[in-house]
Amino acid sequence: MSHPALTAAVAALHAEGRLRVWSLVVTVFGDAVDPRGGRIATARLQALLARIGVEPGALRTALSRLATDGWLERERTGRVSSYRLGPRGIAETRPAAARIYAAPAADPETWTLGLGPAPADAVTLGGEAWIAPGRQRAGHLAVTGTIAALGAEGFGRTCPPDAAGALAAVRAEALALEAAAPRLAPPEAMAARIVLIHRWRRAVLRGHDRPAALLPPRLADPAPRAAVAAAYAALRPRSEAWLDAAEAGLAPMPPASAGLANRFGMSSGNER
Image (cartoon, rainbow, N blue to C red):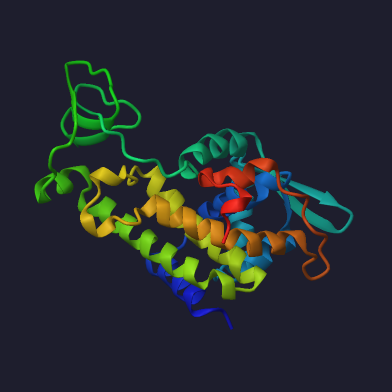
């Protein structure tokens, strides 16, 4: 029986609607497979996703679609079937990782309120208006200074309900999984890590992530990115142990690359 925190996280994921298994598979490859040589045995992948409620038939369909679209490539060595990232998977996954695993940053003292095309790290306020950390250039107007106050209306503009809801959900899940991490078995820790990063990945790639200074007070201390980073650090040792071990006759996966230890700006010394 799974730990209640993992059971709740999996249930929340399925409660959001029909699970897009192909997207979950992309999360697994970006988070756990790419740092370990980019290849995983199909049986190990199924063992992992079964803990997240994915049926074998649904996984086969998702893998076939991803292979057809160039995300993955299928390989066979003797009787062992495996998949690795294809050209499109590498092209899409690795740039996204820089956004997903960025370190929680202290909010700068200087901000720019601009009008015109928004820079990549800006938060839009409606129309062509935006706010972004640091000194930025704007097409029409740029006002640089400090944030003196941000009332309820300001929070609503910088973090609208859809973004706030997504961030609140992933923050609560991260806090629960961080607390549960020491009591999770290695397979549970790996499943919990994938569920957490899958929801965080979607929030980030949909543009829901926000600098802490632009979040409503209920999402502060810790801010969502900091909460996810702490949970990831807590889950990583046990989840990596599952990848290091033989699983139902499967060989261990190759050692992780050095970059894994630096995700969210944390080194191995920051693990709990």
